[in-house]
Length: 134
Length: 134
Length: 134
Image (cartoon, rainbow over all chains, first blue to last red):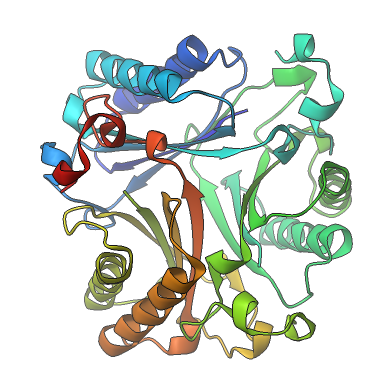
């Protein structure tokens, strides 16, 4: 169910982008129990000057290696789970994608189960029993 | 009021993109009673590997013909209305845009009437009587 | 905290894009008391036909000079504050970015404080005292 938008400044390798994508998805499966096959992401590379960030807000030292991750997902995760997600995704991106931990920015937007159709014009989370969400 | 973001993988014809755009808008007008002139959409074509989807989640068989439709709109539609919207948009896209029903993915994000300004620095839904929302 | 997505039709000057970016940020700092360093924006230029708008909805006369501003921010601003924000941003964009007031469209999407991580895998708004949000 989550839809992910990942924005970076152009110049990242294909391998790094793949690693970022995989890291976000693994964080979702591990921390939010998102099903393994529930993976939908849009990655956009921006020219210099089109992804604007402050290099010091909240005392975090950011660079052009910034990775902006916006997650649209159904509501229901606690602040504690969200914290664990941020921590795990940052850890995985740092390990695998030549990215500094300071450069991993994540933000969530919540909606409800009725707000998703995964094809065929059906709101599957309303019509399919939860055991079949896979 | 809705703002629509449509994401596809590059290679679709202009005619197909126009048909997708029109189908989403017609679904909004028919099912959500959005005014005919209330049409604001951003269509983005992505290189292969930049729009990532699972080809089987929830038993739906997806292809690179995937059409990802994200609708930002004011709250207030029931789950039943949302279901009718998904169904109608998928039907129209399939009929007009060389797209398989399995490849139509739709997700909604709700906000409130105060969250919209349509120009001139005014929150029109707070200041204009509803009869003039057209 | 806000994440801003700004969409325009290609052909705007670098100076205009910079002025639009600055105007939105100044509106946030003046009207919503967003910290000066809390600036995170993604600007995307679209080919003709990819940013679709109605040229007359709600009686506002729009052109290809349209500037679409989507603001993701924590909840808590009143409708009056939001109105002041729309007004100020439109005023600043008109003054500085060769844009007509009719062409400034703004929409907000709200989330919560737990929905933000600004780096290092931490949900700073949950862990940092508010005096340090700068």
